[in-house]
Image 1 (cartoon, rainbow, N blue to C red):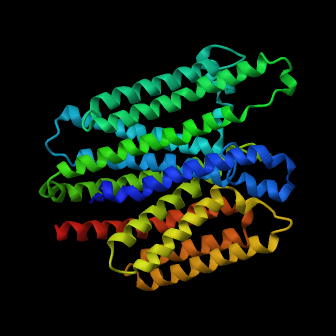
Image 2: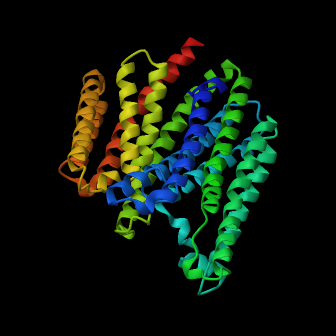
Image 3: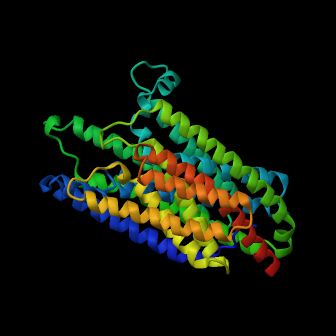
Amino acid sequence: MLPKLTWFHFKKIITLIVIANIVFLITTWRSYNVILHSNHTEIFLKNQLNLATENVVAVWYSSMILCLVAIMCSLCFFLDMERVHFSKTSKLVSYGWLILSLAFFTLSFDEMGSFHETIGESALFKSLEGSSSSGWGAFYVLIILVGVFMTLFSWLRLRKPLSAGVFMVLGIIFFLSNPIQENFEISSWQNSPNPAAWHRPVFYLLLEEGSEVFGTFCFFISTVIYYSYTIKKIQHKNVTVSAAKIKFTGTRILIAVLAGMVVLMVLIDVMVKRNVSTDVGIPKNWFPAVLAFIGSLCSFYIFLNSTKNRIAYLFLSILSLVISMYCGSDIYHVNFKKMGLAKHAIEILLCCAAAGIGFIFFMDANKMTNKICMALWVIAVALAFTLAKLYAAELLFLGFVFISVPLFQQLEEVGTMRTNAV
């Protein structure tokens, strides 16, 4: 059963995203101006809200709102599959949502892993361009093709409501402007009287980062408008009839996605060595961060729609969000010199919170599978923040793989209750 989210449900999320975007742009500007006069600890703390720095809270935020757009694209796809009056051609077009979802998940991963900064120098893009020196031309062609596909999809699927298509096109314009801005900056640097002393103007920085976060915001608004508009057009009887099919499909997709993420993280762990530089993203941090973020969203949805253990689900949502941010910003790996005790206290608090929440759900679970999954989640979180910090990202990822099983089952129960209520 798909969540019956309307424009009213999204208002607060939209407001929070707008406020967060503005705050992060302001703090990025302030960090740019005062960072040179700070000590190491102050630089670290100020950088947490700097969109132009890697492995910080600001970049985690940027990655997660891209993930949010990917989730909305997936929901729009399932919503289209429930529209029984759709022709085969219309449903075929709806598979474009899955392509968009994959694209935004990839962008979310790239935002935290920083692959886009060196991808033009990779052997793959060099071979595509037939050049041994650079493959940036092939990369830009790929970006243009993605933009063309998104524009075509907007025309075919988002003409009703028109506002959804308009926001999608605005997002495309924002995103496609980024390579142009970067080329202009490179040209400014190369043509400056003294390239060695050239310093990136803060206006360029804010324009680039602002294009990214508000471009993502436009994509999110587009999917929200389409979802809210479409769900009103689906009759309750049609939703009830197709709920079992959607449930079965959702289970298979969950298994496939989790299996794919496990395989991909293993490959990343083996092939990508951690760089000690703070200017390089850490790809493996994305996996636990995004899974914990999705777990937070699911827990909050259950809190809003369930009548059992509501407070426990609220605390699970908050804890999952904190863990997602903690891991996505790489704070778990940083060794504070002046704040060591505070960091250890936070990690112990996270472990205690996980143990308390896990105990509640363990005692309440009817299935042994769910009890085992909750126990494994608690153990994984505890080990990640205490005895096995070297493998914290891997343990947290596995922990949220385990907890996704009882969470998904609870989502199905909530969906069943809403269907019966209709």
